[in-house]
Image: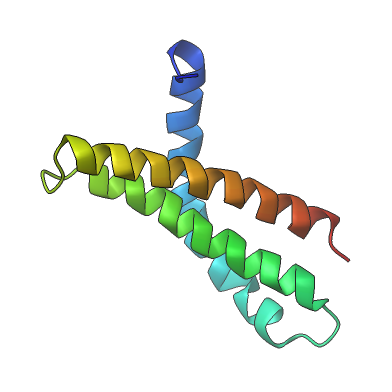
Length: 99
């Protein structure tokens, strides 16, 4: 179903905060998740997937704000945003539950 009303406003507001804070997360925790021997490989994978999928999700929205894409391109960006968001949610769950 389509996002409308308050749900859409919350999605846009929180998405804006997310895309601003995502690079900060990478800068503050990236080295630890790249080099720390005490962190499980699955948790490291979820962390890097979370960052990559967050950039893809945010990038699709930023690209959709340019005049580079027609109707078919916008639909493709929307679908990619949806898929990246679903995978991002799975990576976040893995990151939270991972040991």
